[in-house]
Length: 211
Image (cartoon, rainbow, N blue to C red; front, side):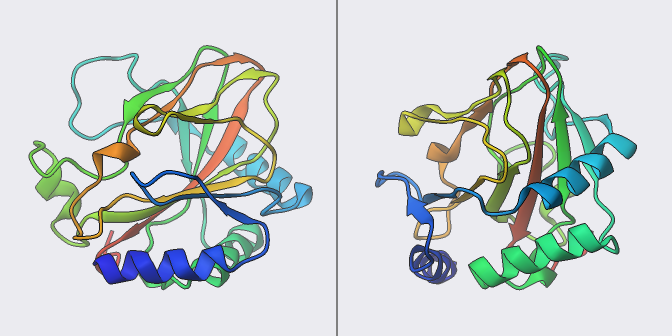
């Protein structure tokens, strides 16, 4: 699985506008203005139309751990199809290995406390989420709007913080070179202080996505 990470990294770094975050602890990249404002607006409308309370794996009994709302985006919608194509063109990853695209909405005071996108191999829900399609590999996240205050994504182990910016893509490899999960990808969707934050999230798996 290390070869897959290397191939994606080599492909994206050659693309104009893609920047690798200067750290040896994880493969993390960003690309400003990855998608245009009209596409951001179309995706926000989809999130608003079908949002529901977000959930977590391995629930630790903290009702304030993840307080955002979530929406599964319809893969038949033109805006979603365009986004899927943009991800594929950038990364070279086969869409058949990707989970359905999700949207998230964070109102004032809402957050997603420090967590990893991979599933804890020792966690109670590991088999439930990974038995069919394997572990999560890459995460692709897009900020759909500017936020008046707050809402940054903080990677504590990398000493990096990313501010919401309309159309900006942030993406990272959840694994190490040997294929093991990378704890340095722990990140915190920090509280929104003013305004509303909308993001898109796309996760890829080790094996074909089987839902």
